[in-house]
Amino acid sequence: MPGGSLAGMSVWDFLIGQAPVVAALTRAIQGATSAGDQRLDKYAMTHAWLITGPPGSGRSVAARAFAAGLECAAGGCGQCKACATTLAGTHPDVTVVRTERLSIGVDEVRDLVRRSAMSPTIGSWQVIIIEDADRVTERGADALLKAIEEPAAKTIWVLCAPTADDVIMTVRSRCRAVNLVTPATAAIAALLVNEGIDQASADFAARVCQGHIGRARLHATNPEVATHRRAILDIPAKLVALGPCLELASWAVTTAKAEAEAATAQLDAEESQQLNFALGLSGTKGTPRGAAGQLKDLEEQQALRAKRFVRDRLDTVLLELTSYYRDVLVTQTGAADLTNTDYATPIAQIAAATTPEATLRCLDAIADCRQAIMTNVAPLLAFEALMVSLWG
Image 1: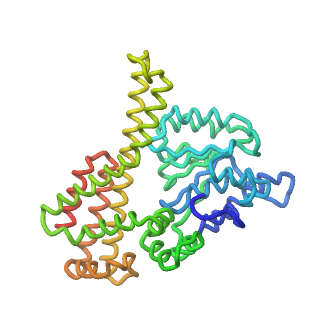
Image 2: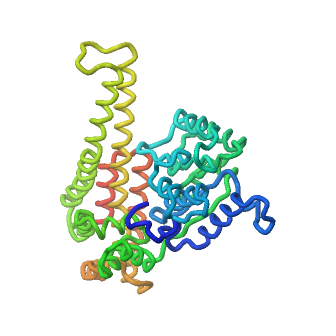
Image 3: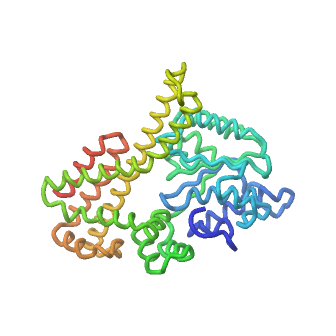
């Protein structure tokens, strides 16, 4: 569980601002662990769940807390070994899948299906959590569907995705859905304060990160994140000619690729070393039969992981620009409070020089850029088009 200590806390205390979801999952745990008590709703529990919600709302936190509650004799006390190992990802009966690639393929799903057929070893349930269920391929979904339709007696599937529509229909129709909402700014700030952040920093981080708990935590604890945010929010004021537009687009893409390389280089090297050792390539001449294919597969997987990281970093740029132009529109219409209060002056200058209609076109251009990148348009081309649109 990210941040803070579990001392004196239940597994649900990190799932902030989600009282209806906590109530539904708690009731399901009670129904699952209290057979014979007719006062409890036995239909509150089911073998397959779909947890949806916007980025940063706590989907994976909810899934892990639910798994801990199922394994804990007290329903999620937060203090016992079952809770601690589940939240740490080391419980033998709780499997968590979170892909670093663009998709989860059929082979990986089949491995999960085989595991789901096993009986629990030390816990009450075999819990399979797929944190990126929206990335399961169609073939993978076909393999998953059969396991969900014919579940083992003591197996619980927990799928996580931004929205129900992101999961293939045949799979989501077999799951009970619970939907998380964007946490309130005050609730995020309170969580950060509880983790040792001073009140002023917690309030600011919670506001500028727009309901994303993970980003708020990073912003409050990592100076590099705050510096990167300011570099992004400086972009609109620099869009004064075609040259700067192209330079800023190049900066955004180059920075994302550099961060991806820095983040994945060590992991790539370790994976390559492990595979070479397993194939007997260390200190030998020649390549054993079949080794070339495995090496190529690893390279492809590493390339996909780097591609996803680049997309995620570029998406952060787009989110920050969205918040900036949202503040411009707010200033022009007086509809709400600013998110980026530290940029009130340049936001006011742009708001005075343009119209609400122009600002809406800028927001549309940002959305178009995100869609272009998701459909494999070259990131540099997509960002060059975006910067020119924002300048125009």
